[in-house]
Length: 185
Image (tube, rainbow, N blue to C red; front, top):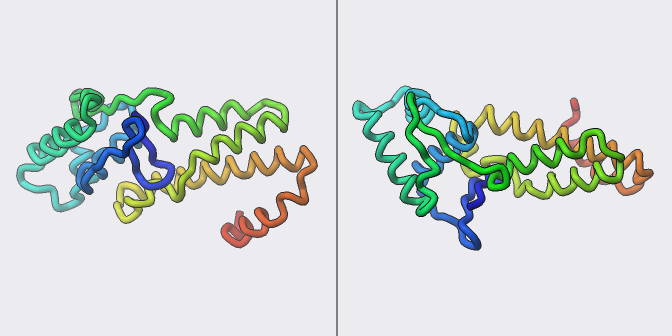
């Protein structure tokens, strides 16, 4: 199973995408943003409903978790109940964000040619704006800003590696676009 947040939220089971309704998508995104860590039920309810937590908030959350487990099918055991909330188990090669960070880390301290290759591979994991389909959710805003910052840092590192390799002419168009998009950076 593959979990993707570097673009619209996706879960792929082999060659097909797992269909997730909006409520399950938000819950999964929250759990993925803290993958392999316990997220308290209180925090999940606050992030999912804000000031409008239903009276039966814990029960409603339990129902959503149960639905998410079913949607993940045989991998439903990935969502574990752990005091004081829930934990989503994700392997190191199953999450695009983990793969991105691993590749960027591998590029550090290598020669410019290898760094450029690793950074290009890392940046190819991006399919658009992070959590693009959940960008209106208040819980997603800080994560989106942080992820975009990480992407831009990787782009900068890749450009530095390309400059060291003498690829200045190849970078002109990209640099012009980046300056227009991020004039203060």
